[in-house]
Length: 166
Image (tube, rainbow, N blue to C red; front, top):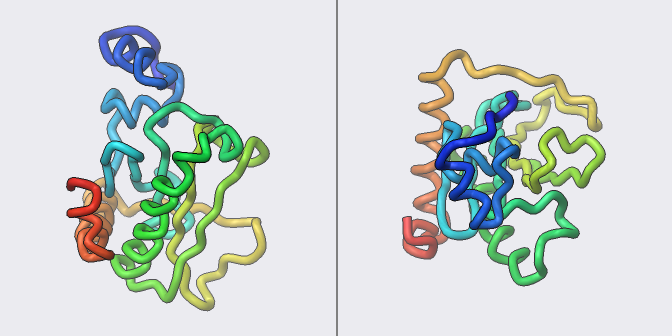
């Protein structure tokens, strides 16, 4: 997926720490669609388009930051508060036993914008090591249903709706 440069969305992004050529920045600004599960002043979280399992969610900071070491220290805790809540919400929404949380920095980072993977896990799910088969949602309705379930589960995790103004 290669974003197109130009247009009003691009001029808005440049002034707000976003890169108009970055697909994740384009999701953050609303220029590109995504199955969102969280959007607030700190981050945007949405379903991975090539999930390891249904519910595989990406959490991105709103400003364009390439790797975790590039993220200002003051932004780490707020970002990972969202990751922590989503780790529980993804688990609960998908009926998984737990979750896997990971960040790639440069190596294996398919999009050069910091993103945290929150992946539902169940014993015997076939995920071994770091050679992971990717799956697909059955269709857009399936992705929409999973995103909706995660949003609802997120609302019940530690009062996140009140805490983040959702």
